[in-house]
Amino acid sequence: MSRYELFIGRRYLRSRRGSRFVSFISIISMVGVAIGVTVLIVVLSVMNGFERELRERILRLTAHATISALGAGLSDWQAMAERARAHPGVLAAAPYIENQALLYSIARRRTSGAAVSGVVPEEERNVAQVADEMKSGSFDALVPGRYGIVLGNELAKELDVSVGDRIVVVTALRTTTPAGIVPRSRAFTVVGTFSAGTYEYDRNFAYMHMADAARLYRMGDTVTGLRLKLEDMFAAPQLVRSLAVALGGGYYIDDWTRKHANFFRSIQLTKSLLFLILLLVVAVAAFNIVSTLVMVVKDKRSDIAILRTLGTTPRSVQAIFMTQGVAIGAIGTAAGIVVGVLLSFNLEALVHGLEAVLRTQFLDAKVYFMSDLPAAVEWRDVVQIGGIAFGLCCLSTLYPSWRAARTQPAQALRHD
Image (cartoon, rainbow, N blue to C red; front, top):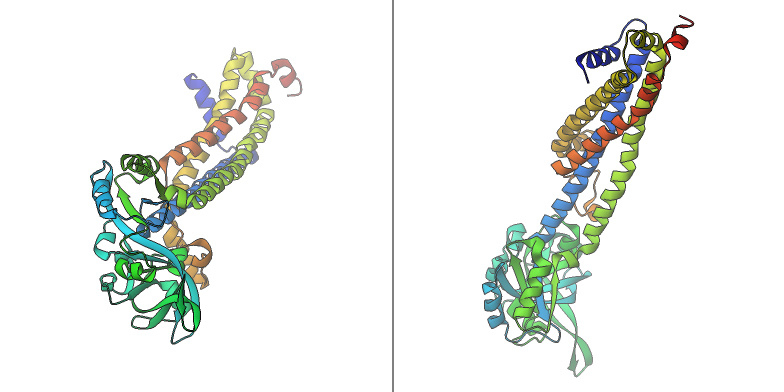
């Protein structure tokens, strides 16, 4: 484009006495594009933040990967743990015993099911962060032989117990007594509660010492498996598979991407659907530029005729009106990106302020797994949104500028 094409295109964007309505429509088009881009950036940032926060909270309590026996349990788990720690990419390995149980509050007479894990506290610290999420008591109070238990905060509320209270852990194993066959059970003392901020874990998980769990579940010297902490958690599927092969095979392997696949797949699916739906808002705003430029072309027919009479080529006329449409798209997209990024970075504070004003809570942890609304701006998404929005705006300028280039000077000046 030459300088005079850019100059005339910019002049048409400005409001003059006879074309203020057209300039107003141009401003509306810019605002529409900006709002669409802003909403798209904020929504995708919230989805990214929700996925990141959920992943971090889940991995605080679970290992990156686990390797367990196909049968009753692992017998020579000490040697396996040493070989696992020496495997490239593995930072730590800790044994565990895991099973389901029914918890019964002796004083309150309340029951609840839970997933009970038997761990060694000093080794569990290397693969998970349960000890850092304690709300009351201490994770180190899990001492073998004392039959202590650590409950999730929501699980403790359900049982209406606190530190020092006693509960009965009832297993699916059966014991033969003179009175008949009864479920195997043992009384435990609550020595602590943890709160990871994820309702699923706070409501359904309990921890005891591995030695106590071995006695309760009659595991003997065997364990359920090994928890692993890896250097690269995103390489967990490949790394745990190679470790199982190196150990000789015949093991059941699992990792965080499989165990919680439904969560992350649903987030990705929701993110993709929201992107497509909200992209329609940007598309509507972008194609509103078509009507704006059509009105501009109709309003400037005499100007076009004069330019053509002075020797301006149809391509130059087309460039003039494309300049106007591209300017509308560029300003609207840039404004939307700036506002969207600023809102995303301050969204959590804005939501908390709005909750305080309205005296309500928008997110229930029982439904959304968290009570905050995190937002994480991924610049790849910002660039993608800005590029698509600007591309749609540029695309919408083709037809009006083509019509302007086809204007015949004689017909345009006939009634002027």
